[in-house]
Length: 309
Image (cartoon, rainbow, N blue to C red; front, top):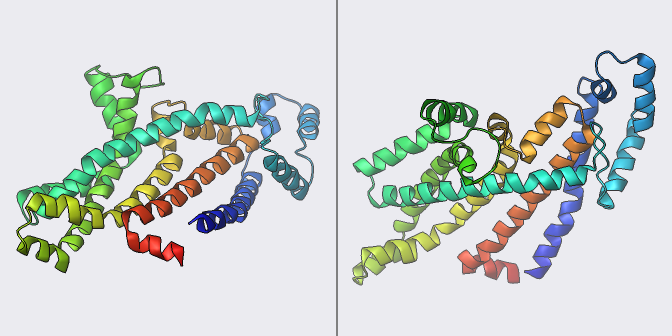
């Protein structure tokens, strides 16, 4: 297991270099000029060229890339081209808010999706199963930004129950959490139903029932445990996707997270902040997938046996 973890950690380096290279090239090719954005539309060409020279934007692309990569290995992401603040400080201030929103959305999705999937599988073709299927289809097909707008109109503008922007307390988390977690709840419901149906069709389940074991123990102690592998996989993938996909939700609700920060930085062509945000998000995504792989061993002894070979 230790050797496997070390191998995965070493694989992190070329993946991150590839991510850095792709984002760097895309930012270089994107329209706009960071110096022009900083100085404003009324700035003279001389002032713009002087600022570009000061920021190193006139250097060849290869030199800029090498300088940036060297800084990253020293945990130095450079300074924001917009306000001169250290990029790492801005990212560390925004990332906790994104993690809070993501974990809250995942928790909501698990509390709704997994029980709904279990009920759907244990009552196959019943009204409950049809309701769960319709819920999963609607929630999975609903765009986050559209649901965010509906929630704002209903609970903030119409009823006035909840705040709509910023993050100054737990009540500010409710609407973004629902907007971000609803779609994931549908994914969990469908995956849980599918995994449970497959597990409950196995021979050992029929044997347990023939021995007189209670249905509750059959479902929750044996079938659910063996259905966890694909569910854990989806949880890991969705958690990583939400970290990067909270961008629109954070923008709609003015949530002070890394998604909103990156949108503002893209508009300002603040290359350093955008690249730093992508690198941090990509690193978290890879670490989450590593944790998911490790959890496999605790959910399924067969996987642990494979690690020991």
